[in-house]
Image 1 (spheres, one colour):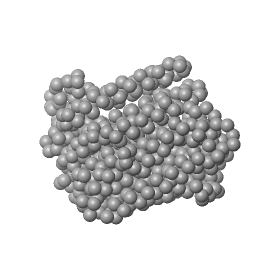
Image 2 (cartoon, rainbow over the protein chains, first blue to last red):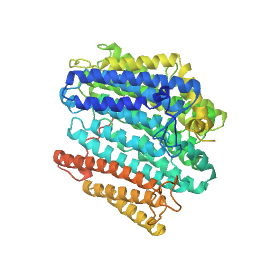
Image 3 (tube, rainbow over the protein chains, first blue to last red):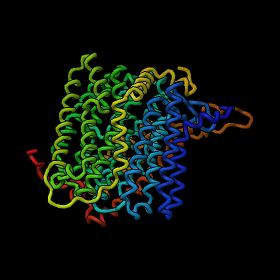
Image 4 (tube, rainbow over the protein chains, first blue to last red):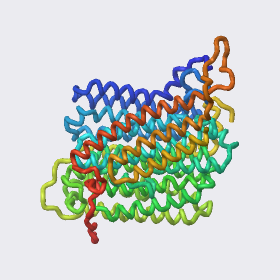
Length: 496
Length: 125
């Protein structure tokens, strides 16, 4: 039994999640105070950002932090263990949510506010942050479900037929994915007798590798479905364009990244031996995803569906670091995911601005924005260059690291695939840009809405692209911790 | 006993997959219920079966007397049941609303988000 109380300063480990949950509950009670909702939501998000920032600073300087609940000693109590990867992703997620709420405030009508748009956003962030910070696999499942139920609410907020159709596909397939995750959890518990991540690392070394490989394959399927990896990606293009653009930005920036995060956490840190056996399969699906994503984007005429396919291509690159498992490659992968959170959310927000300007979602009917609204055309072009990975924008550095890693270890197929993905993404992006901005236009443009959040996120991308040292330093520490988890295990309170 | 229950889990899974592959939304929902129950049973069996020996610590002792039933899978299942029930309730209402709005239970006719005759993208710049 734990006899001492966790020092007050260490409560920052759980504070971001608690703040989101309390804020969400508060906003639900205040649902008739429509004016106050936005400001309370922004206030809570600023507090969460500050807590995430403090937490990130502490784990970057002093190694992982842990807190085990309910006086039970680990591995029996539920541990919340934070390493640099978790804290960094949580910080990014809170920042993306802040920008999305800023972009949303201008255009969200009263109805959805009364139906709970803001509380659901905070609850979604609670689920996402909880997934990044937890040190227990079953707890990760619970946070997945918190995230899922909040996203269900957000995707059908306006309740029109398009949203209902998207929500049916999103809901059924994501629910099956989390159930598969639960199956894998049950089997892992039956094999190792523990669900604490730090404890699994030690126990997995002694277990039968064949059995663990089967379980790891189930985990890969479940997280691959959440992350929209190629053969199980059909729900993403069918649903992500249905809700309002700001909600799409939230989903695109956060939800698929949680799937990728869980994929890396389980494959690289928890079950590395099984990962080595599954390596050829993971490489194949990663390559298929990163090529098919941008190819589908080229063939698409709906703006936000097209961005959804670009997002899919990015997921392929994010998971291609898993099978190799060397420090440089994991380093590139982790930094790619954090960059991609910002870039994809920014693209969706910019798409929202363009849609309010032109009043259509079809790229063939857009046009004529370049001369009238130069700021949004510059922002969108910056984001296109960032997602394709053109220097000096943010997307370039992670891709450079990945390429350097794959060249060092002689994995030429992946080198070629990443380069091809960048080329195809650039083609898809510039095609979108020229159709949306350069074509002549007869009708008048409408008023732009939601520029604030979009410009904030694009500005951050430019700044981080020009000064990437903090992001890259954090990612390199995160990769080191992933590959040598002894500090993680000690922080949880177990012996490596 | 464990082998028998494992076979039952497999049977339930197979039936669930068969139902989920159907085009009718109601059948898919029934499949999802079966899947949830199969998984709960799986977690229960994964914790090993120990009959009629509750994990209660006698007065004065620090740990329960060996052997005792594993209480953890029951806690896991309880959580999973609650979450699964909430999700299922949501999906049922969603399916009903979709039926009201689109007049369709068949996924073949639910093509609003992905139109069946997508236009070609412009071929020139």
